[in-house]
Amino acid sequence: MKRIILVIAILISVTHTNAQETGENDPGAWYMYFGTNQISDKLSIHSEAQFRFYEMVNTFNQLLLRTGLNYHLNENAIATMGYGYINTDGTFEDISGEENTNEHRLFEQFILKNILGKIKFEHRYRLEQRYISTQLDDFVEHRARYRLQLTYPLNNKWFLNVYDEVFINLQEPIFGQNRLYGAVGYLAKSNLSIQLGYLKNHFTGQNFDRLQLGIIFNTDFRKDKF
Image (cartoon, rainbow, N blue to C red; front, side, top):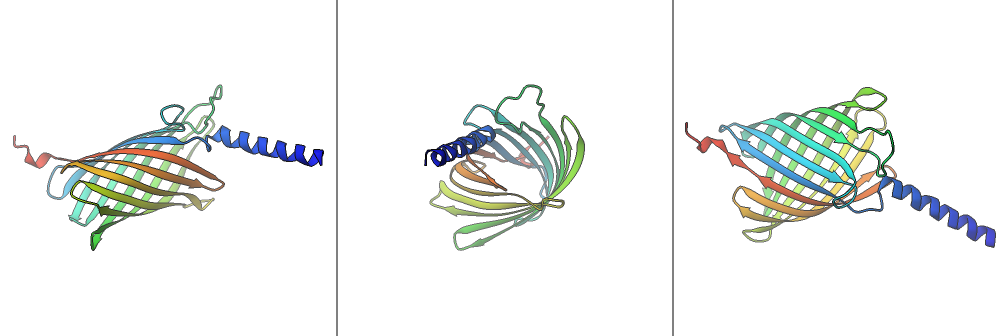
């Protein structure tokens, strides 16, 4: 009986240690900015910056900078081509000699919007070409993503926002990840809103809990007359 208890204790200890090494048991945080900058009736520029941490403000995980050119077919359909730079530290614990991964990413995107009652639906389809550099190798991967987002207004200022996004690799393994998100948002101005939410980021065999603080600030340069 003592041997069985000892084995169970060792297994629990090993499992806990492995989870800690990945940061899976630590609630992390993503701090984000998004912007749509209108430059003509049909064209706008997407701007984005994300700072991701394994913990709330410590243990850097990822820096993501993204931009793109949007073409507005109409108010409910937007096509985008863009570029992203991503710097990632894939290790929760500091490892001597371990270098971060750098990625240059091209993407093509199409967004469709519709309204059913008070609920706003947004479908986002995205293809990505990922040029990844590690300490040991350089390689290219391809990925498809689909996100369904629902926004429900509580009143003129407050709203709820939820989405689910699936990532499908176009090489092995096929499943990449799934993100389930829910947030409360506040419309500070017509072009400025803030969201505070929770993200469950699921990978094969791993789940990460992330607090998200997002600022969405849109500008309209069509108003400027030179």
